[in-house]
Length: 145
Image 1 (cartoon, rainbow, N blue to C red):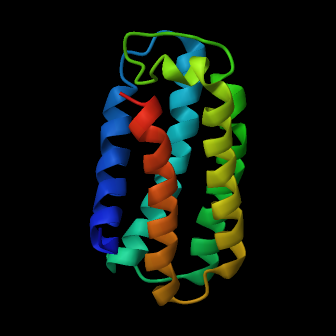
Image 2 (cartoon, rainbow, N blue to C red):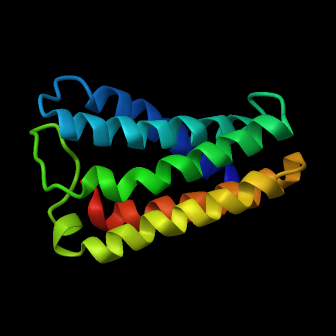
């Protein structure tokens, strides 16, 4: 998959997430959705730069990666309790395989933390989006509706 497709997918996921939050009643599920949306918003920042839709800014890119790492570190705690809501996209597999779910969040945190110091040029964005996208997909394909 090319980097433009990954960037477009991230932007689409961000828009979809915003719609999914309407009508959420359970505060724990809303907090999870807000945490995941924060990751998506920062991915969108990187994706817009990768697509050339916004001007490359190394400090903003590093900041977005750092924010992704910070938010990824909170994911296991947000999902620790098996809370439900009709609007939730979380699959029950999260709680039946919580160790793997948590490991995937840690992997995203590690990748993003590394990128928070290594993105220097626009050319760095393609591989960054590739690794972040693959990490997100590895979790969403199993644990998200």
